[in-house]
Length: 401
Image 1 (cartoon, rainbow, N blue to C red):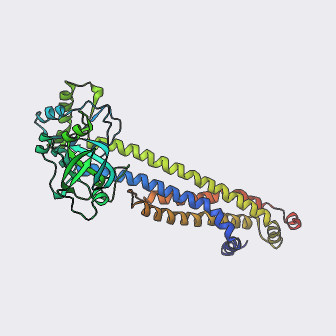
Image 2: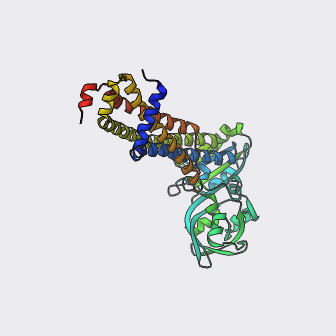
Image 3: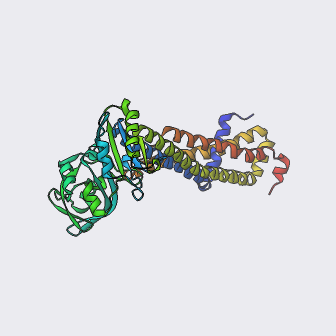
């Protein structure tokens, strides 16, 4: 039997003799592995980003959303406003409950154009109460936050994010300047501190303009609110506070008109949904790995046909069927493993590039899974060509033209 080291050397030499074909054969594996890592990193990054946002809100927060929520986006996202029956009167009634409830706030979000001296940008305008701004940890780096008196008087004032400043102000200090939203002038009274490196699911808090809730309701011609945040004195009192909220809102609304969820349960639901989405994305990308495996098998079968005389000659001088079998398996596995390694590198670099725009996180399990599957594919799809090569009759093979 030929030593394993010699078989490996022959396998590598065979692949190097056809560099272009070897590279094209690996292409399917490269694309498959990099796609798995990229898509899973996007899904995982999304999940981590939302988790961080909820953790920053604290564990003693309850969110009231319109309709029945089986999964939603809480304070950081955009529950359905069109069908909302929640109003500022509900905020006031919940504020009077006392007990474990410390504070209550509310807000809405609407897409809108914002302009300043001929420069404009399309952004999200959030109307909020002072308490809601505190709950979302929307602090200002300069100027001031939206106040209760701003809401009481429906003042045309705004706090703006860093992305909005970059788009329409550039290097100009925006404090005291007048911006236009929906044809109405607003005075910039605060600049929001930059949050993270962007957003997820299309939401970038740095690309927001926040105005008083009452002002936003007048601006957009609506009376409802999108979400109500309730801060509880202690997380142990959340169950009691949820019952109090349900009973109070139930006096005016039907049970299907609103949902009362605490941040931890809402986060668990979102994590479950995003986990399924991440696995689905990885599964879709993994299909290309199978396609790459089929490509390897096809090329190896062609290689067996092309090298029939070589195989016959090697058998004639003493090579055993197992030697031929192992050589072709090594060639197949080498193609898939090298292709998998290149795919891991491309996937990692691609994830770093995408992270400049949306949050991404490369996980060890996605790399290990993608690379491991690529290696297994090399074995699985290499068996048939290797077996065919090992079974060639040396006399018939030598006669092959």
